[in-house]
Length: 222
Image (cartoon, rainbow, N blue to C red; front, side, top):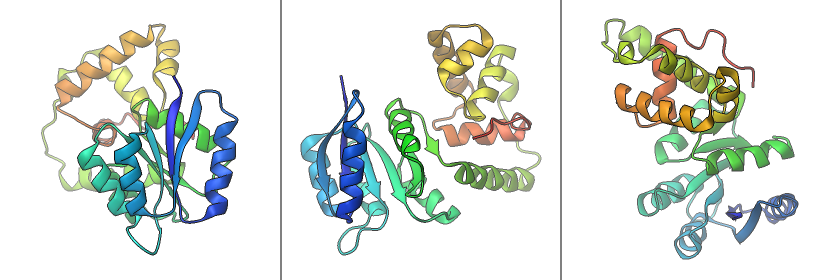
């Protein structure tokens, strides 16, 4: 089954370029294309796409930030990939808080767009490299402010700690499975247990835990 995608961007040339790019992928299809946040919300409610590619700034009318928050309140399972020209930590934090699954710069390569779509569709987060560093720096600051904070880390088995480390470093389930000589299903089961034991809900919280325990010292180059 193809990944159903809605594109929301106020520039016709951007929408057209994305449509052409996606048309070349056998596992994807564009089901809608709109030029502002209000239309993005309305068409998402009507079409219920798997992924919405959302421009952050779409004047006049409702911007991508507000549209993202509205969509996630009504359809939490819809994945939203933010498209922006802003390489700014404040924008990154705000869109993640609004419920976006990913943040991608408009200057990114074509294959990065395609990879980002597939990644958020799988339920994983996608951030461009500098955005990941923003999060790590922020978590480092918080960790230093609360050096005595108790964690649930020691409840994890040695295998779960390995899976946690690789996940926080950006490796996909298949990559982790290959490195640990396990099945993808086993990795997925480990992740469920990790999230339960650490009482976490998002990958960003997971990265914070990994950072506190020194698991990002050899992070994957992205």
